[in-house]
Image (cartoon, rainbow, N blue to C red; front, side):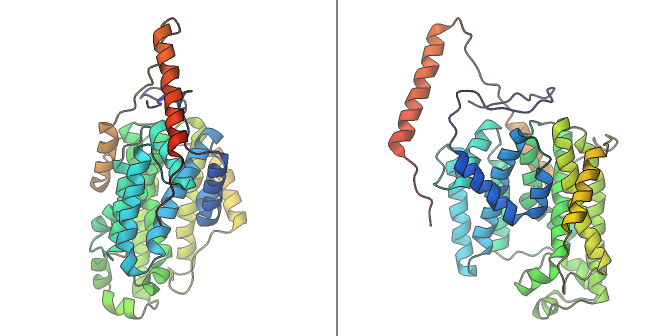
Length: 367
């Protein structure tokens, strides 16, 4: 059964049914939190403002995403495609309720069940990682946005479902925010990516600026022309940050400060790149702790409007919103207290499931 206390009109947060048997235990949740604390400091800072009922699954989701990225990124080129295949298998098992023996996998199995997350959303993330494994490059901003939709907008959509919101207009704005963050990451990491043989900047923009993509990869150095390309990418991100703000008002009130903070902190990374003259070759922009605290404080007192809420989603994000629409949240069917046979059957089902889990044990994760 799927939990959903959040059908379209209810703003309160989703909770799993009382009889749900979690796969992840306290140690698993602690491991997910630790993975995010070291692997995504900006998200970890913003997540401090989330209510505990959302923060814990958010850590699990981001841990699976972070570790999936590392599983592809931290292996030799010849091993990347097999790594993607293993991730696809792990995702399928999590959705089947048979997660591999890893904290993030067990957490994900609970998350997709408790919040009725369609498999197409995390599958989109893994598809984006497969594009990375294949060394794909992007000719236009639309091509790059299609990539960002997979590796970032998909995560924004899943976070929105964890908060219990399935409204397509709010999902569209969450996807906008995810893409804005990804474009910011790309602008910040131009040098780091190039030295690893990766190029995400739109190749048509580079050629328009007089930069040959192959020459740049052979010798990644900063030039004013490259700075203009980076500035152009950050301008595209800023437009999406602006679009995303209206969606925050559609989230549960307790969740709004954290998402507002995430947008502010990531946008500030772009401002740091700008202050460095758009040189993200010789340095990597960072938002210092004191500045993050100031932005967290600002997120607590800001207000949100709905003026752009009904703007159509970006075409590159539409498949994510359609996947959610095709998998509506299903309210758990709890037998009424007077239906004793049904109540007994429910308890027997629970006991049988516990026995099956005890017999199977936790299978080891693939190496």
